[in-house]
Image 1 (cartoon, rainbow, N blue to C red):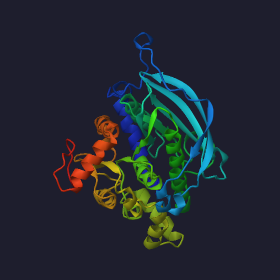
Image 2: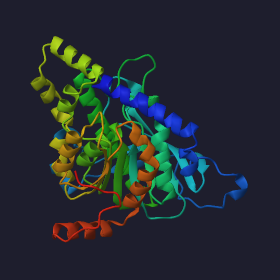
Image 3: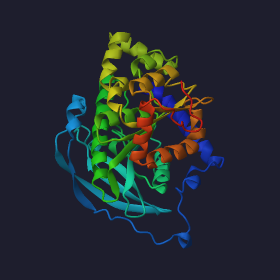
Image 4: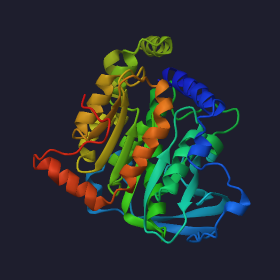
Length: 377
């Protein structure tokens, strides 16, 4: 599975580089670059202690959380250090321990960056997840853009990425060894739960208005993370889908073929592969997303998450709002990211009561007003 997805991350890197080189300017467009000192106003931010502790508390819905993602009430420590100020956004480096302990000690600490809007708030808040290749600049740019719109954003590195990867060690979150992939994605979901708890503890954050978003692998983990954490109310799933085992097994990509052959050489079958992936199959948990406010972004010509995969997740989650990029694939959708980040920011910034009114309108059978460019599959 990891081999097939590596092609995605490589091409995402290529397209991202082209965008930056050609002047599409993610950094400038989203205010990611530093502004001249003379242009900076005096801004006030809620202070973040250098060290502290967060209380993690469950809700009555914890009994509905899949067993592998459940946690008990507990507290955990964190560290914080202000790194920079980017326009009206202050960026701090955050660390906290993962709820899951692995044999790779480096992997047991979650590393993140908190993009904090200026002011007292309360702001809606979101956890932002990265793509498979660990190209953090893309997700950090999205997080910075959201913070500029008044959405506090905590970007976190998932298991075995960045500082969490031991030099020279082959272990990865997405592995050709399926049990390792299942373990890595389970740990990522648990890390997301603590990230949400950290955001809830912030005085400038509206502790009821919490969300999660990501692209590709980040979108996949956004669906699983939301299923694992009942406090998440808004979910932005971009370029991801369900029916993972079937999608990878049937994928014509040569590297997917290598994975199939290795699985069969080890005595496995298509059926056993599907069963092995079941613990982290998003459609198995789609029912837990119903009642949340969800915005999906999909590419009609997606080579990794084909239309059938996206629709499977969409249906399992209750057929939420979905935006289709009719002429884009998984790789070429990068050219729409700036536009769609604007849409995502509007979605996350929208007050919960407005989302709830729209949901009630849809449930009552009245015609809802779709987002510009939205189409139904």
